[in-house]
Length: 159
Image (cartoon, rainbow, N blue to C red; front, side, top):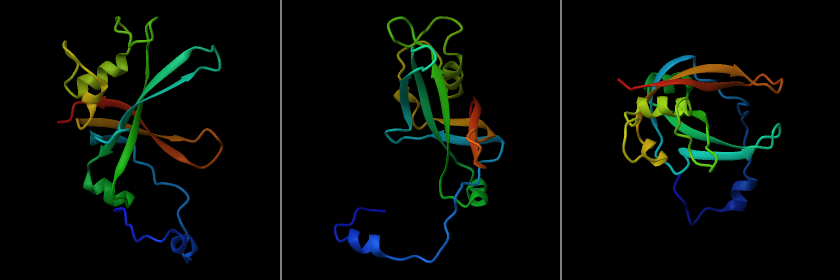
């Protein structure tokens, strides 16, 4: 929707509707799906926090992948199907990305999947727009609700 200078917020707020809305999304089915990492500002993002257990800082890479299969979009009745791939990041003593062996293996797998796991300058922004295959798995909500979420559990090269 394009911004409209003639849009009347009050009229919109007072409009009545006579339809029932869905209360949950149909989850993406388990399996392998072709996609592309988003190009929007928050498509590749970093979340941070402090662990309540040990009071240590944590950092997570969140990557939004838009699934490109038109049949999947049609079956889910969505114009756009996205899934989030979250990777906990290992940090060194200085709070930078830990580049030692056996650290940030899942980030290495993601970089490999998009042909970026090689020597030379690299930044997280370089992930944007890259094709990738993701493996999804459904997960029931932990809050006792009937909600089902889709997790990305693996990535591979798009072929």
